Image 1 (cartoon, rainbow, N blue to C red):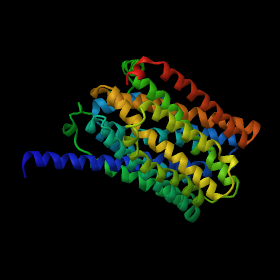
Image 2: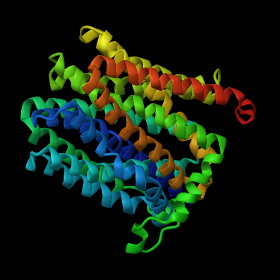
Image 3: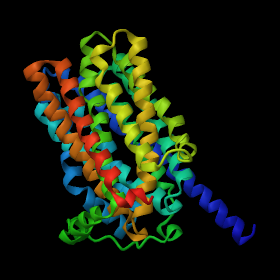
Length: 404
């Protein structure tokens, strides 16, 4: 075997391993988001407490994602993904062991950080290996969305058939599979990471990292991705919180809820592959904002829909919007960021991601507590569409995007 052939083979193995991390990493979020509200309901939690429990998983990632991305840049993604994915898998077993709402909220804090680092690592790895290539970003997004289709489906069925222990047990095994995929990632030298020997002080946040990360917002492409991420994950946070509560309230089983959540991801996989052809006709920034409009509208009209078929169609449209948005976010961000700051840029995007995951469930929970669940969907949806309109106006007026 020639040196070129060996290099190509190693590159393919590296891509396959990254695609495996894509499949198992983000899918942990909808799996956990499907089961946690059901678990909180079984513990007798109020809507406000359910919102707090769902949002608490995003608190540590909100404050530490930039630090986590910077650690990926300094220490290597493979090592950190192994540590955090294994930790997350073990922590999941404590949910049914500690059937108290206070314990649930505390576990959400730590598990959200562990699962978030797995997703940051997967995004950082694909950005480094493919240098923002839109085709590979679409493939990565395809495997991600297929994982988010299969994962919730299995978790929902496990909840119906085996209860809390079965559902959280499935999530534990899923996290263990992510750890194995991380173990198979190429070594740091294969992607020219600046890996260092492990030092405990590297685990502490550095103010300089945060200053450098927030300075990146001055880059138009990065700023667009940060805002678009917040809006896109706002729609996703509705699905991961009171969408489940609403469906359970109208009598749907965990299996049917899992099918609806999973079907969105099933549509999202092929939708991600459509992104590159669509870019021949539509500029990336407009395609990105349009995909988010689709996602927001299709999830927020849920209370107007009656019957499983109507909900399934809306879930498919929601998946279309989410699926087309992800490769655009990854590609635009990777292209706008320096090679040595890919992890930091992903951490910055994840900070916006987690901010939405904190604000939306808590805000929606209190709106629902005051005015009911139907009003909660409409109020949040209207607010998100208003922000989208403002973002579109800024993009339209920006010389940087006019030249893109």
